[in-house]
Length: 126
View 1 (spheres, rainbow, N blue to C red):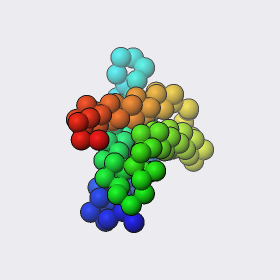
View 2: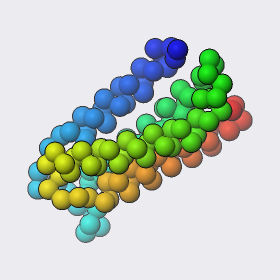
View 3: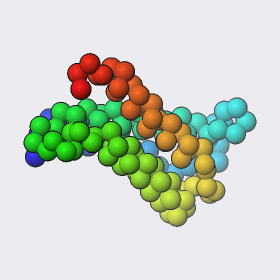
């Protein structure tokens, strides 16, 4: 079992993501470069943190060797799945008045950036 001290930051981050995803969007939120909503940049940094924290947890896993060896594809798959589910749930619940592909794009960019930063920082350790 994964120790709570390793799970706690990831759980807090996941709860923050749920909070960001479930807050209603009004029509007056800022739009950058004429097309990108400000909320999409928040998604980028949330997914960057999500993948970075959960890769750290996955690579410190000592009990399940297969999970530790395959942490990168597992976390990437979970990040993509979470991004798609969150966008579909936002659209289906009516929080988004239209489907916003920018959120999904920045979710995926954030996931890849999180994996890249983890690899750059810890490549000599793992």
